[in-house]
Length: 521
Image (spheres, rainbow, N blue to C red):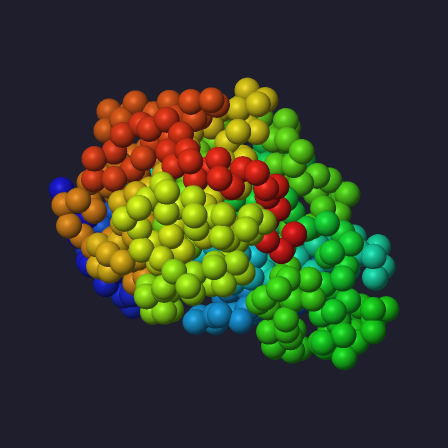
C-alpha cells in the first residue's frame, strides 16, 4: 500500500505542534550524537530529525574551513529545518550559521544497519538547501527501509570565493570551503549515523545538478576518501572545476563591486552578509551572461585536479557510480519563456547561439537536426540542440572516462515527461520527485497517475538497490548493463523502460567535434 504523500506533507507541517509526544501519545524519538542528544518527531512510523547541527556557526570563520559542532547539554529539539546559506533566491530563513542536516529513519540503533542515502541539493553552487519538499525523505525511508540525510552547506561567495592569492594563509582553502562543509557532514554521518539506524560503512552520496557536481568533485578530493561508498548523479555534469586564475579574477571583481581593494580581504570577512549577497547580482566578469559565478576551484590543495579531466579520478575508481540525465534538460531553464515555444526558422540561429556551450555553428546544428528529425518544429530543435550542446556532454564524458579506467558506471536517460504540463518534457530536475517519491510535493510536475507511480517505483528501487549493494539491478528494474563504449548501453526510463545502445547517437556525434568545458570554468 503506497504511502499517502498528501498525508505526509500535512503531517510534516504539524510536527512542531507536539515536540515530546507523537500522535499516538508515544514519547518523541531521541537520538544521541557525539555532541549531544536531539529530539525529533515521529510521522507514520518514521523518525524525523530536522535541523541537526553538524558544524559550528561559520560567521566568525568566513571563507575558512568550518569547525565541528560544539557539545551541548540536555536534549535539543530537532523539529524544524535549519537556516540555509545566504543566497539570492532564498524563500526560507538564511544565515551564515547554516551547517545543519536532516535525517529520516525507520528506527534508532535497532540493530538493523541500513544504507544511508546522503543527498546534496542542487541550485548550482549558488542557491538551495536541503529542506525542499521534493527532498523529503519520509517516503523513501518508509517504503525502502533506508536512512535519508539532506544537508545545508555554504554556497556562492561564502562557500567558493577563492581568496588564497589575495589574502593570508588562513584563506588557502577558501575556494572549496563549501565542499569541506560537505566532508564535515559526511564525517558527522560516519561518527553518528549508527545511532539513527544507519550503516556508516554503507553511505551513498547523490545529488541533482549542482548537487551532483559537488558529488563528482568529492570523488577527486582525497579528504573525502572513505566517507562514501557509492555515488549517483542526476544531471550533475561537471567535468572541470574553476582554475585559480579565473577564480582570482572573479574574486577581485567581486571585491571591487563591494568597494574593496584586492588586499582588503580582512574587511571582506566582516562586511554584513547581506552586502555580499547583494553583490552577487553583478555580471560575471568572464561569462557572456548571468550573475557572477562561484564554484569549486582547483586550488592545488583541497582540490588538486579537475573532477573528470584529463581522466576519471583513479582514487575513486573503485566506487560504483550512476550517471543520469533527462531528455529535455534545458526546458527547466528556457521553458519559462513562451517565445521559445513559438520560434521561427529565421529566429532560431540567433536564439540558439548564446545557449550552446559547445562551439559548433548554429546553422550547422540546425541543418543536421532537420535531417535527423524532419517533423521537429524550430522550437523542438531549440530545446533538443541546447540540451545536447549544453546539458548532456558532461554526463557522457564522465561515463566514458570511467569506462576507460575500468570503473563501474551505469547510465540512465529519463524520457518520461512532465504530466501536469506536457510541453516541459523530462526537464532538468524532473527526476528528483521520482526518486524520492514526492510526486505531489510543491515543485513536482509528475502528477500521481499510475504511470508516474510506476516510473517512480522503478527509479527509487534502482537507487535503493544501488545504495544497498552497489548495483542498481533488482527484480523491478530491467537488466541494466554497465556503460561501456562502443555500445554505450543506457537505461531509457519511461512508462515502459528499456536498455538502448547509444541513445541519440547522431546528436552525440554532431557535438563531439567540439571540446567541452563546463560553463563558468
